[in-house]
Image (cartoon, rainbow, N blue to C red; front, side, top):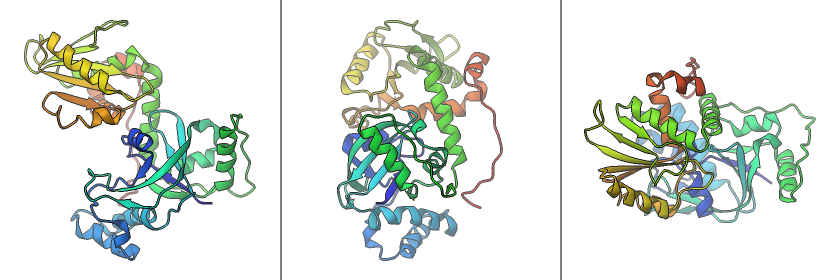
Length: 336
């Protein structure tokens, strides 16, 4: 039985939606046409070339090789693995629905399949290293080849036992790895490991300072609904005035937290709000994105990491000692 890898965005930005909706999505931007309308993989490749002047033929071939199986090759009762980017775990589900295309869905959720997520939060440490390499492959959607050993871990996990890995006599089949994605995942794991709780507010505070804001960060303990106050100018007397609430819990933030931030903004005479949640947001919050556009911004771990890496050089030594990073050069395998 086939096992498929399906990522929820480059750094896991769609993970909560996958789990909450009990689906997997083919999250290719600007693909508002049904995959099964393409009769050959070459037709799909040509579509990518024709609709993006910047796409090279080799890149289009790579994209088509990943998108095509989602519509044509995946089957009911096959397994799908979703590696988490917020925690060192994987989620495993069984495909229970045929390919679906919804032209009225928001981009990039046009393409989906229903999934029964029967095994959530399996620690990655339960898998052998070559399997972890496969899960870190430079692909968003692909078939994983170590079916027997993966099934052994999953079945043991379902029974509540400590998984016993099965050593393969075959030479490990190591996939081409996305080194950048692996590095970002390691950085993300280090950030949440070292800053769980109030520490994450310090990271967000450092980002805002690096962006030119003057800030006040609440001490550890009850924060009266606000973790950080930020405003423009050297002394912080300018606009915009922002209330920031930071959540580092393992569960997505719900609508109640969003409503509480709105009330706190009024109490502090803030013009804008920033709601930060490492584990993302429930659909009740995501559905408010457009309505809150002129008042509140939402940051999940995706935005935290992007902003952190963008402004890392401007941060103080305390943050750099806490999360020590250095730049390296690697070959760009995308355009090779």
